[in-house]
Image (cartoon, rainbow, N blue to C red; front, side):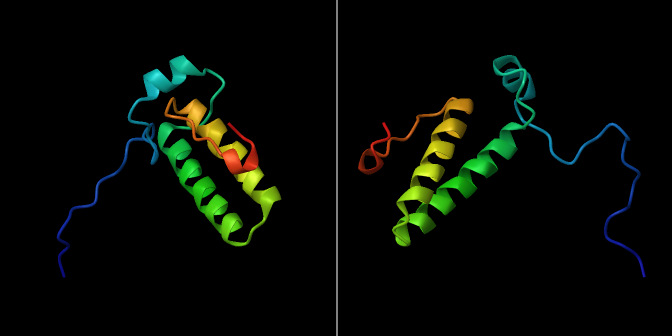
Length: 89
């Protein structure tokens, strides 16, 4: 039985996760060890955690996730959210 796609060997220097904008990310924060894609994934998970905490009315967890959201947004150079009901602006 034949396969639709032919298998090839990968180059040893190739990685599964590659940032689309590695040069910019490295120039902005040389200590940052995360790719842009990983940061966006972390931001998505932080928002999900925040929404769950909000449904559960858990102010401590909401504050924790809000802080993480703002930190990641700052690192990604996107608009930083404010959380006025938690006194985080």
